[in-house]
Length: 322
Image 1 (cartoon, rainbow, N blue to C red):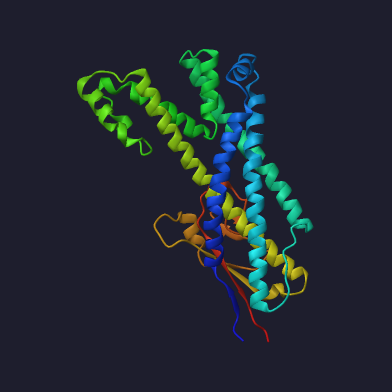
Image 2: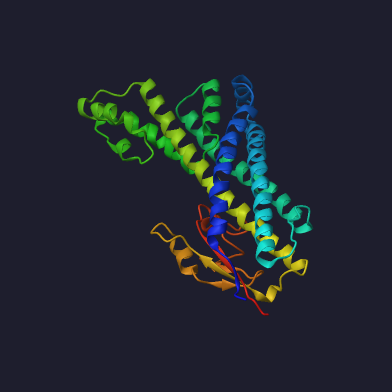
């Protein structure tokens, strides 16, 4: 009997399906975060009292809960799908136990991670927005709107949005930098070019509208990043746990498992992941990726530089010894 091969495309398909669910959860999470800040008056009062962190924590918690709920669902489905694959391949009865101590501990840690990451990222982005508001002399209600507008962005993304606003304010001076921003809404290019050519400044309303569209596109970009990153993490973590449970139950001899790191076959693969291609490891051994040790693609314990937007997978071979 030949070896059993759990091909990388099985997990890749689960990740593709899960990415859509996680994307909707991230969008819902950002909306929930905005709602959690209360009225503009309440938010303006908190900012005026020097207590913006209270609103940031409330918003981040609300957003993280939506994302975690989706993550948890993806984890359960992926674990069950892997168990079903093993059941069919090995002709044994295998289930996926969500209340297994490892699975429970893992999910508790992921809930805390998501809340911590989103809170830290939102705090940095919001402080960037508030400093920008002070520089522009915004009144309390406008500061509150600026606070809300930062929800869903990272600090760097918020900074890029602010820079874009500055570029738009300089078009009458011949500054064409705004036309070089990849995420701009190109429907406004004609107005920007006219301002550059005629020397007539864009109106405040035009600048606000163009900046808002730019911000929306950055938020959509971050939504896609979160969706891909967390879907990969949940699917691979659950699949790995399903294998460990099958080992615990005596259905698989761990010594007969060989995992191989697989990359996407295109020029977008980061060099550190390309260098890891073909590495083979046992079930509890870690892959060496860019100096980091990862249990699998999307391993949430790894550094974000090697995890965010990863498109790698693993193929698992179960050697036949009969």
